[in-house]
Each structure stands twice: as structure tokens, then as C-alpha cells.
Image (cartoon, rainbow over all chains, first blue to last red; front, side, top):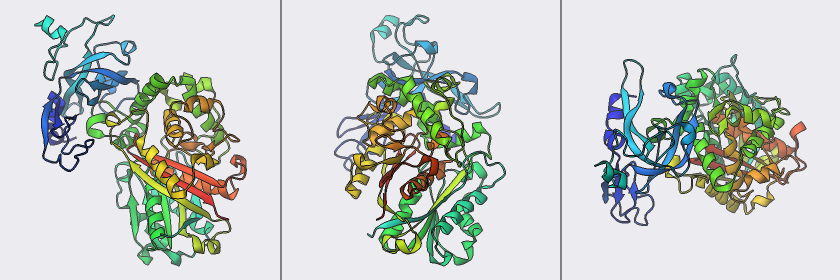
Length: 162
Length: 389
């Protein structure tokens, strides 16, 4: 993948920049130029505004991947999940900082900024969001993980950490 | 719009065809179909070719004229059009050929589907075919086709209680039927224990829950129904051809456990044909992953939502069941040469409707359904085929 192709998506991949339809209020990630769900499809053109996701969500479904996508060979086995964010959009991303057997549907997670993959020894290193547990697990303490991205949601654990 | 008939069918063996090139398999299927149709080459109006990824797989784009040329039709200067829709490329090409004949623009067309997947290593083939998913928002984050389908499976199990054994039964059935199909990639039978015990690909899916990467080609000749009996002793009418699309990524679906594209394509097809799911006796459906088949049975209207697993276990979709599903062995056992799959489904169903399916023959079918899916369901195509009286 070229540098430009990855670089142009950094506001989304590094910082969860989505969009919101000002006609119906629905939030999208990645951002969209036109609202696909509201009755004002045509009228929403030019009326979508930037919207920052908090990075908080929960696991909607998941899999443990043994035959990896290109560039993920060193991470096998890894947990991939559909994460439903508190703002509504569902994101596809890895769940890290836990043992695969500890992931479950409904697990509270929070986005964290990590290295996704690298293109060999001389190629581009891709960074972006993954998700880490945001609740007590047998093998991991609670709280906002290192490298958390997105606007702090002001949750109990955030205030406690502050 | 006029009625369209399938006048001839042909296909190559599916599998690891290391001794054969893309153009060789493409023309073999096409010429078989032409001979089967008792048609003169001079009657042809156009070629439609379904293919997903020849540029990445064999470094060759512009394959419409390539196949036309090596089929000996280059000097006739026919229009040759390649059609792409991920794994549904073949049946999308069929849809284009159907429209061309139905409209009256051409009388006779060849619709082919071909894919050469084993000229690259397995890992490369998996990576290239994963481009039928959303590269920027699924693949870049670690997604693969089996991983995305595995998340659909996990959610289906969570919501409806679908079991690992029910998924595995789909593969056992596919291999059972593949053992009766001389063109199949896999002709060995497998047991429930083998499927469940196989190495994991993306949990809960294992190696035997995933269709293979195959080489293969298939072709059909289409013509107007009013001329059909002149060119075929047993013509088959295309009762409906319908396409529907959905969001590119699984994460944006209305319901992760439903392919709305399949629901809509089926609804449009049954409306066009003025028929219902209960009228279908034999079907070829997408079983690229075992979970894909269960979703398809529900979304096509053969099972209630969430009931496909128990229905499959109860034998409703076996040969001799209410709807005989994937008598060819499906994508799982007959094989999965992406762009050829949808056309090969129609080849199998035409043979079933003609009574030529030998060991796989269903008793006296009159209405058949083909269901083809691209990616994780961004495109679905449903075709209804009817034995012409």
C-alpha cells in the first residue's frame, strides 16, 4: 500500500473521526458524504458534519483468527471483533491485552492506539485503533488503557484515574 | 422484454488444474456449451465473462477479448464484456447476458465464468480474494473473508442457538454430494468429527468449514425462448434473474446475521417469476463457509430466521428432502473458482432440470434456484430456472 493511501486516512484511523448527519442525527464511521439511512438522503448532501467517537463500546461479535490477513502473521492467533460503539457505529478491529478465551459478546472495550502491521523491513508501518478491555478481567486490571484514543467519555474509571 | 432460455451448458473440472492455463479452461467451457446448444458460431451476438481478479491472479486484465480470440471468434469482432462482482461475478455476467437477450439486442450470447486461483500460493490467493471485502475498514484491521464470516457465525450462534455440529453438517453434506460429481474439486467424504476436529481458520470456523481456492470455468449459451426448441431438445427457461446489493462491510449491516442482499434478490426473483420458495425442488446456494449456507437457507425463504441449523440437521435440504440443496457438492466440495461459481451453479441446475445429473439426479424437478454471493454479502444474485414444456 502506498504511503499516501494510508496517510490520508490518519484522522480516522488514529483518532476515530467520524461524521454525523445534521438532518437525522445518525453518526457514521468512517465518515460519509451522504446519509444512507435517513429519509433526507439527497438533502443530507453537504450537511454531514465531523463527529468524534469516544472509543468506548462493547464486543458485538468476535473470532480468533489463525489464518491471518497479510501483515498480521506475527500476531497469530489474534482476536478480531465487531465493536458497537456507544455512539452507534460498529467498527472492525482487534481486541488486545487479553487472553483469547476471555473475550465474549458484551465485553466492554475501549479504543487504543497501536501498531497494526508493517510492510516488511523497509516498508510503511501502519498504525491505528485496536480495542482493549474496559472492565475487570481475570488477568488484567481495569481502567483506561495506555494509548487510548478518542474523546474521553468521562466514565467512572476515567474520573478515578484522574 | 422476451423470455430467455438456456440452450447449452459446459464446464471444466474444478480443482488444482496446474497443467492448464486460464485461457485453456475458459475456452473449454465455452466450446462445450456451444456444442451442447447445437448453435452455429455465426449466430452469436456477444460474450459476457464473469471473473473476479485475473489482474492480481495471473497479471492479465482485458480478458473478454482474450477468451473471444482463443475461442476462435476474434475475427468475428463480437463484443466481449468482462463483469466483476467478487465471488458473484459469474451470475452477474449471467444477469447481463439475460438482459441482452431479453431486450432483443442480441439473439444468442455466451455467458462464461472463469478463475485461475492456483497460479499463486495459497496465502496470496486468500489475500487477493479478501479484496471482495472492504479493504480499508476490514482487511487493514486484520479481517479476512473467513474471519468476517466467522463473526457472522458467532453472532448467529449467540442469537439463535446455532451449534458447531449444525455448521459442520453443511460440510459433511457437501462432501457427500461432491463424491458423486466427477467435476468436483473434492470427491472424498468427511465425517462430522473430521470437520469439527480440523485445524481452526477463524473460530468457530475450521479448515473444513471453508470452500477451497479452485481453478475452473463454466459457460452457458442463452437465446430467446421462442427459438429455443430449434437449438435444444430440452431448453430451460430463465424464470427470473435478480440482483441486490448491500453495504460493503459487515460492520455496517442492518443485521449481521442476515444478508439483506439475498433477501431482496430472492424477493425480486420470486416476484418476477410469480413463484414462491415452496415451489423450488432443487437449489444451488452459496456455501463458501458453512455459515453462509445456513444464512442463505433463511434469507432465501427456505427456513425461518434462526432455524436453518435444525432444519439442515433434520434432512430438509438433503436429496429427497423438501428442497435438494447443492447436489453438485456446492462451493465447499465442487470447488470455488470465484468468477466461475455462479455459472457452474446454473450448469448443474440445467442438468438437473434436463434429467442429466446421473448419481446426483433429483426426482423430476421443474423449478430450480441458484444463489450466488460476492464478498460477505455486498452482492447477491438469485436466478430461477424452469423446465420448459
